[in-house]
Amino acid sequence: MAAAAAAAADALSKLSIDDLASAAPNLHKNLSLLSPDQVELAKMLLDLNQAHLFEHWPEPGVDDDGKRAFFEQVSRLNASYPGGLASYITTAQELLADSKAGKNPYDGFSPSVPSGEILNFGDENFIQFENAGVREARKAAFVLVAGGLGERLGYNGIKVALPLESTTGTCFLQHYIESILALQDASCRLSQGEGPTEIPLAIMTSDDTHSRTTKLLEDNAYFGMKPSQVKMMKQEKVACLDDNDARLAVDPNNKFQIQTKPHGHGDVHSLLYSTGLLKEWHAAGRKWVLFFQDTNGLLFKAVPSALGVSAIKEYHVNSLAVPRKAKEAIGGITKLTHKDGRSMVINVEYNQLDPLLRASGYPDGDVNNETGYSPFPGNINQLIFEIGHYLEELSKTGGSIKEFVNPKYKDSTKTAFKSSTRLECMMQDYPKTLPPSARVGFTVMEAWLAYAPVKNNPEDAAKVPKGNPYHSATSGEMAIYRANSLILREAGVKVDDPVQDVFNGQEVDVWPRIAWSPKWGLTFSDIKSKVNGNCSITGRSTIAIKGQSIFLQDLALDGALVIDAVDNAEVKVGGTVHNAGWTIEKVDYKDTSVPEEVRIRGFKMIKVEQLEKTYNEPGKYSLSP
Image (cartoon, rainbow, N blue to C red):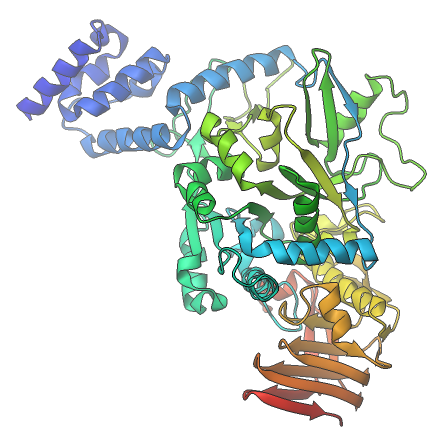
């Protein structure tokens, strides 16, 4: 103990803290507990005007474990933030000063519509981009941002464990992994001997989701992916701020802990850099990294063509987007040009875009053009980066992203907060630091094909104004059936029109319940090649296709059909299938006798009767009732 105290005292003297006793007398009394490294952290905190953190420290011998735990936390917070706590606090002071002064982050910038690619599903251009994207896929890596729980949905599990639809019960994480494996398989077949053969998946988790995501993977044998292909990156939280001076907030439940909150999904960039994953992927000959979020069940219908756009247009950054109505509550992808000549293409939040346009010579602000949509496409936070350029930029920044702060002030004086705040960052803000020479573009696809996030609970979704998307588990599932129905229609299948119904207070179109595994229908070309003759599906029907080589030939479906086949089993399905099928039974979201993942949808499937066939052996088969 004496030796430790002497070492600490020696470190303090070297660090020139002669007035420690007066600056932080309670800390001074407890010097014997600290290692030299911890003394350096203490000195840094005092230099940053954080002496209040030690005001409540008792005499040595009282709560010593708590004091040690405090410095262990400070060490983690310091190590996990690019530039350490000193950088975090300095940045916070600058941003809080700007916030108090009401500074406009876009002051001096003029908005304009950036250049990008607008795709129409199923046309020749779309198919060309899709095929190019499949060819490139083996040179890609995927990054799933999965730090959130489903509490906002009325679901207490991790969001990636939610079923994306009830027909097969496939959860989001399984669907994502099976989609990546289908891309991997198709890409390797197209471009034999050209580069890597496995597509890696990195998953950014948080304290809330890390262990449960790992367990979900391990319990399900990684859904068919090799464990070595999956890398987990846990995001740390950041310190909370109590006031405009960026004084760190003490945890109200533990005086020996700094209060922390999530920093935002922008941390994914610093994690990819600090873990060395990005360098590893680049060294292995990978060219692309694709970022996606946890509950958009349509995303992989858009990935091949968007990746093809990145490859053909040679974009450094490509944002997936959907058409947006003027003033719709979704950010708009915008080119901003400063009066000093610099420019950037970034997401501008909808509540900032309209006033920015009005202040820049557009008297009507954000308005729809002749297409019926705003010329500024809607950002859906699915991004594709070219790895070489991305790594070069992160080598300069360490992965730090332009941050923002959003304090809730007690009153108009802006001198006190209602509760502590913190710095936040978003992954789509990465282009803010790019030079004007960076090739930043976007790819627009229709929302029915690319975007149906599940993020609102039934109660909140029911309050959404009519005509606006619900973004609930109900609408998310119905969007999958809609997309699959429209894709099959484009491929030549006669699919009945939907009927309208109300579940959990949400009026939705109910299409035939059509579901397929990614390896059956990865691209539109795949699907067209597997549908022949005169096929039809009635509105009350359900079909689940699980297998790579299942072909529909003159199939007339009126009921339920489930086909499951191993990869080397070729199955031709035709004729008339008629049975009682599956019915949809309404469920109230308040009914606690029903599992959460069911009641948040407002319905469940009742399997009355179906034709179900499984083919476990390779070979050629025909199913024609």
